[in-house]
Image 1: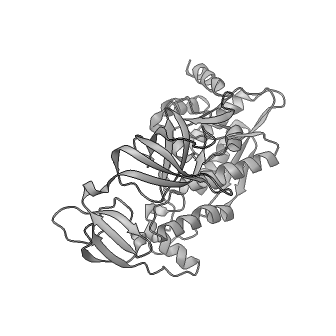
Image 2: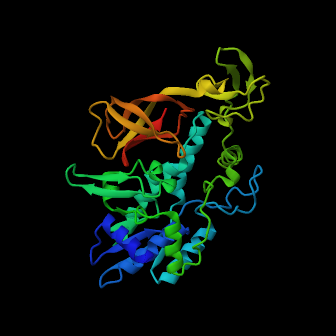
Image 3: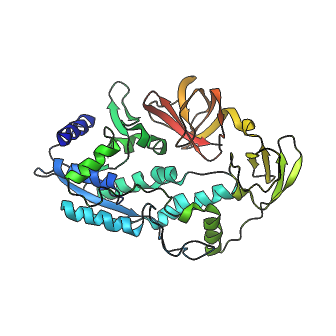
Length: 396
C-alpha cells in the first residue's frame, strides 16, 4: 500500500522517460539512498539506468589533533569516509554502478576559503548554501553528463516543476515542512533545476524510512547528519586557527572595543571572528541584565552589544540575489522571508535596489511587517510566495 502511494506521488512530480540514465547524488544517508532505490526500481526497463555518484569534498583527518580538533571524526558529520562506505554499500545492494568524484580542491576554493574570509570579516556564513550553489549541483551535472546521464537526482526535500505559462522552472517547499531544504537551494539556476529531480518532495521522513526498509537498505535507521563536514564539533574558532596555521597565515588582528548601543566603551575583545549577531555567551562583560551582540563593524573592529529587544529590526538588505519564480523584480512584491534555516518566514515588502549587472546578482531591500530578531550579515534571506521560492540572496 505505502509503496504504491509513494510511487504515484513521485510519478506526479515529474514524468519519467522510458529510456534514460539518471545520476543519483549519494551522500551515504537514508534520504539519497532511498532516492537511488526508488529510481533503480522505476528505471529498470531497456536503455534505462541509475548511477550513483558521491562527491569527496573534505579530508576529515586533515586538521585532526591541531588546536583541540578531535583526532577521530565524530559520528553525525556529513560527507565522512563512513558515509562514502555506506553509499558504496547501498549501490552494491541495488546493483547500480557507483563512482566517487574527488572535488576537494574545488570545495576548498568555493566553500572553505569564502567561509574563513567571511568569519574573519565579522559575518556569519552558511557553507551548505555555498556548497549547493557553487559545487554540488554544478559539478554533479557536469560529471553526470560526462558519463552519459541526462539528469541528477538528490535526497533534498523540495519540489521543482515547470510552469509553461511563465516558461520557468519553479522551486517549491516540500510536503514535509519539518524537513524543508529550499532555504539552502535558493541559488539554483533555471538550467540546474531543469536537470534535477527531487523524488522525496512529496514524502515525509517517516515514509522515506519505510521505503528504505522495504528495499532492504541497512541504513534505514541511520540518524541524519547534524554537523558541517569540515567543522569538527561545531567549534569555528578551533577550525579557523588550525586552518590559517596550516595555510601559513596569521590570525589577523581584529581586536577592538566592545561598546554599548549608546556608545559607552565596556571593554575590549580579541577578535571580531569570535562574535555573531544575536550572540549572548562569551561576551566577558559584567552587566546587571543580559547583553547580546547587536552589530559587528569589520572596518573599526568595534562590536556593539545591547539588550535583547535591540536586536529587533524591520529592514534588511541582500545582494547576489538569484531569482527563481520570476526573471527579475520590477515592482515591489509582498513575500514571506526566511532569514535563518529554522526561522518562521515572515511577511515583508520586497523592493529592488539594483538590477543584476555583469553576472553579479541583484540587490534588494525588504521591510518586514513586524520586527525580526537578529538579522545577521552573511546569512541567506530566501523569499517565498506561498510554497514557491521567489528567490534569495545574502544579507549584508
